[in-house]
Each structure stands twice: as structure tokens, then as C-alpha cells.
Amino acid sequence: MSGGGGRRQQSRGRGRGSRRSSDLPTLPADGLRIVPLGGLGEIGRNMTVFEHAGRLLIVDCGVLFPEEHQPGVDVILPDFSWIRDRLDKVDAIVLTHGHEDHIGGVPYLLRERPDIPVVGSRLTLAFLEAKLQEHRIKPVTVRVSEGDRRSFGPFDCEFVAVNHSIPDGLAVAIRTAAGLVLHTGDFKMDQFPLDGRVTDLRAFARLGEEGVDLFLVDSTNAEVPGFTVSEGELSPAIEAVFRTTPGRVIVSSFASHVHRIQQVLDAARDHGRKVAFVGRSMVRNMGIAADLGYLDIPKGLVVDLKQLERLPANQIAMICTGSQGEPLAALSRMARRDHPIRITEGDTVLLASSLIPGNENAIYRVINELTRWGANVVHKGNAKVHVSGHASAGELAYCYNIVQPSNVLPVHGEWRHLRANADIAIRTGVDPTRALIGHDGAVVDLVDGQAKITGSIPAGLVYVDAMTVGGATEESLHVRRTLAEEGVITVVCIVDADTGKLVEEPDYLAHGFEHEPGDFAKATPAIQKALTTATKEGIDDIEQVEDLVRQAMSNWVHRQARRSPLIIPVIVDA
Image (cartoon, rainbow, N blue to C red):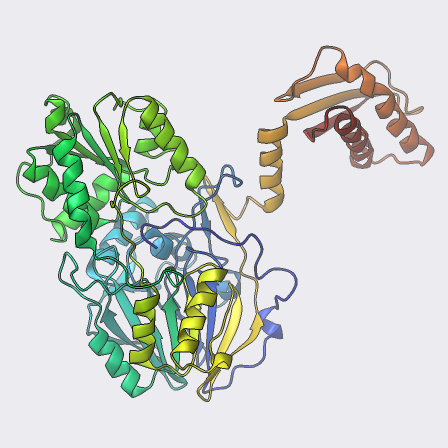
């Protein structure tokens, strides 16, 4: 996706329908196994594992960003459990492009085996290497370009140029004894891209003539009819913002959207404005893009923020992160008045990115706050300031007709996108039994030219919480949500261990739970009843006694207030 955010199902690959790898059918010697560990049933967290002749090849390893019901979570990773005891069998990690939902999980995988070769284009590897510096990992990298063909173990990989919302995107054709697989990565078919680099449909056609046994296709825009608009068609709307704004122009975009930021820089130059990059990731990525020649910055156009602040408002433009309402990003902090840059009357804020499903509330909250401080906010809903980086239905149909694959596995999309993509494939002539709708953890075996789903392995959500990976669970997130929404009540009971009687009235300590003085005293009989029950039944395990008190207090609170706060009982022997 453009920039990396994304939505997902909450439970997939775990529990019902999942199988341990030892339970899976044996892969024939001439077969190829494909296991998506992310990106199916969700937009983001893209990762696919290919297995052949006892060796593994990984295509992409991305992250998801948390939603509001996942408090305290920084990012969400694919589940590496299925390959963890076979990391020595991994011949390479192939990266299709440099967005977070495709490269963000690589540092966490390399923590477990740092010497896995990482394969990608020039800009993709540059973005990744900068990220890995923060994790103090020095990777083994293999730089490739479109037209290159490299072998990694039994996997013969050919790289094909594709157009996306970030430069240097690649599709990868993987040849093995089991057949030829073509993975598009994220792509569209912009015929007038800003960098002149079009999706190489001639290569797609050539591979189709060779015979594509399995086609993995980006599904993000499969429900959108027609063709995705060219990036260049945004220029008039961006130019209008710079021409009509009396005050400062503040543009928020993904920190990897080089093409979009180039358009903003061009508009700033044409209208006599100086530009400053705001936000650590924006400064880092645009510095990399400029150094490598992917971003053309006229001399003197980009200045330090302190220099910028000394200019008149109508000569100022800033480019920052935060287009998805991320709490710690620069734009969200400006909206909260928690940033040195103060929004004022006359400013225009341009949100030059899509609204990722699931982020709408956070984004509109930021828009409302910016408007409150006097800004004119221009976004996709009221102006043509964003186009997608993904192929729409018409482009997908063209690709199927060109490639004419034997089997299809739609990837990179929610369930509705996968289904729409499969339907397009079927309409172009793909056998309906060979247009597979998979899910994270689905095991797809390509044997004798036919692909089938043969099983499923665990592929749940792995939460990164500050310095811990996998420590946060659905249970702990439930506790956090309860604390945020319902509050917490601590009940301290001093109990005679012999009789089970309260020695004195319990202490009730409530936070985030509205109550009147003396309310909780009415709960004491219920607590005493629970303690008496424990004594009569010979329950002397302190945790079991606390559970009884917790349940008694919880039932009482729910009856009285129709609330379900977190209850923390503390039992002290007299």
C-alpha cells in the first residue's frame, strides 16, 4: 500500500483450521510450497514464504500499524514461528519496494539471523539500511535492478520494473523445478509516471509466453473500476494550494512518497516558497532520496526550520509526517498544540495521502483540530490531492489477459479485495478452481502445474510494544482497553484467615470510575459472602480467593452502574 498502514482480521491462522508444520502433507520433491504469513485478509504486514527442495525464499517482510483498540502497540509483525527453527534454510529475503508494510518487519527477522541476504533495488535497500542502523544491524545486501536475474539456492529470480507510489518498485518472477511464479508486489500501470519508469508489460507478456504457473497479484484496488489516475494529474490541485494560500503551506505525506513530495517541491519553487522537512523519518528518507538522485531539490529551496521561521508566511512551506493521524507524528502534535509549529489563521494544511481504512477517526480528529486553530485543510475528500499506487480492476484485467496464468493467488488485500481480484481473473478465463482465495497461514502447494490449498499454519498478529516483541497479547490489550474505557477499582481486604471474616471495612481505591463517597460500602456484604463461601468450601489458595472477591465485586458494580471496570482484589491476612 502507499506508505504502509493497514487493516486486518483479528484472528487468523490460530486455533480452528490451523495445523502444525508436522501435520501438513509432505511436499513432493518437485513441488513448491507458498505460505503467506501476512497480507491476505488485510492490507499490510506483507510476507510470503516460498519453500522448494528443502530451502526457503521470503518475499517482503512488512508491518501493520495499530488501530485504536490496540493501545500501547507500536507495530504489528508477521508470526515467524513457522520458519523460526528453519532460518538456516532461508536463502534470501527479496523486497519488492521500500514501503513500511513491505520492509518494516525485516529488522525483527534479522535479529534472529542477521546474515540472511536481503535483495532489493537501490532505493529500497537505502531505506532499509537507514532503518537497520537504528537497530544496530549491518545487513548482507544484494542490489538488483529491473532486468536482472539472480539465483538464491534453488530459486531463480528475475526482476521486473513496476510502477507504484514509490520509486524502484519490482515484481519478481521465481523459477523452480515446480514451475514459474510471478509476484507483482504493489503495482499500478501509470502510463505517464513522473520518473518515466512504467510497469514492464512486455516482460509480463514474455513471462506469460513462457508459462506462468502461479500469479500472485496485488488486490488493493480490485474493487475500483477502470484505471488508476496518473500521479501527474495531481499537479493542478497542489499548484492551486500554493497559489491561493495567503499564509504557510504545510503538507503531510508518507515519508516514503518521493513522487508526491517532488510535486510539492516543484510547486514551492514555482511560487517562491522555501521548504523545510519536519519529522525524523521525513528528514531521513528525503535526504536518502536526494542523495541517490530520486528527488530533485533545486539549490537553496530546502532550508533549516529555524531559517524558514524568519521568512514571511507567504514564503513558507513545510513537509511533515502524520497524514494518517498517528499520535506521535508531527501533524498530530501540531493539531494538539504539542509542537513548536503553531497552526494559525491563513495556513493551509494539505493531506497528500489516502485515508487508510480504520484510520478515519484519527484523521478526522486531526482535521477538526487543525480547522479549530484556523487552518484551511485540503484532503482527498474535498480536492484531488491523492491518487492510489495500486492497479484498479481494468489494469488487473489487462495483466491477466497478458500473462494468462494457470493458477492465481490474489494477495495484498482484505477479503473483499481478494474476492474481487479472483473474480476478475475468472472473467478473463482462469479456471474458477484455480483462482484461490487464501488467508494468512494458508499453505498453497504447486505440484504438477496445479496450485491447491493443502493446509494452514499459525500466522497470528505479533505485537511490538516498546522494546518487547510478542509480549503484548490479546488478553493484555483487553486489560488496557478496560482501563481506558471502564477504569479500575482496587479492593483491599484484611481477613481473619481462620474465620474468613473481614476484620474491618475494605478499602476501595477507584481510578477512572465515577462514584459518590460511600457508594462502595454497599458492596461489602457481597465481598463478605464470597469470603465466607471460600472458607466453607476449604479454599485457601490466595489466588482462588481473590478470584471469588473479584467476581463478587464485578457483579455488584455491573448491577449498580452497568460498568465493567478492572477489579484488582488484594487479600491481607489479619
